[in-house]
Length: 226
Image (cartoon, rainbow, N blue to C red; front, side, top):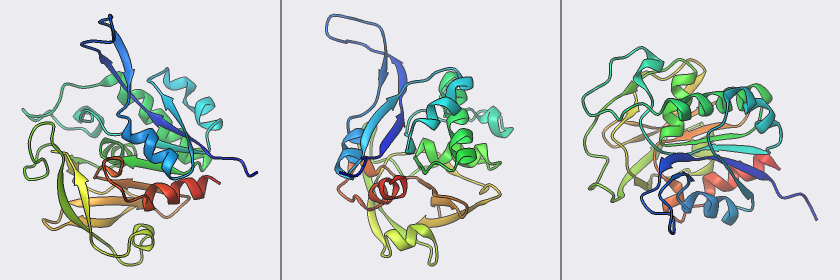
């Protein structure tokens, strides 16, 4: 039987209000992420924040990497002052995921960035972000839906050739697309909804595929990892 690809997924590191009888810090990941990897044919491995110096050794053991959603990227990483509605910086996670992205790009490991993961990918490669926008969150804690249209000729368009309704929950987005990346999908209001790199298999999506039933993007990552 062929080897099943091992897909690492970055996690939150948060104080848990309740963890059985405990109140303590916990490495957390919404279950939609590992389930999506599993449904697409991969094995999911959680990657809690660690020393950035260990990122290359971590990525060397993976067949693919997913950088998950979460808190806003620290604006200092792209030379901006924080907007009043930007989250407090999650510097430990920023440092770890930046190192993971660098390691995956250097090693040619297939990489998928989801929401924050796409935004951080853009920042790592020299792009910037819009720190606040309206219309892409239905209500606090509630995912919305909107239509994403692929850019013809891109990798994303080869996976999802038609306009598709996707689960969305974000208030930040790509502003200046980084050198080496191209925009490969847009929302109806023009927001960049996907970016990709022609070198290797690197894709970022602004929405949350783990909250939906469309396996095409994750299945393509797992196939690339094979």
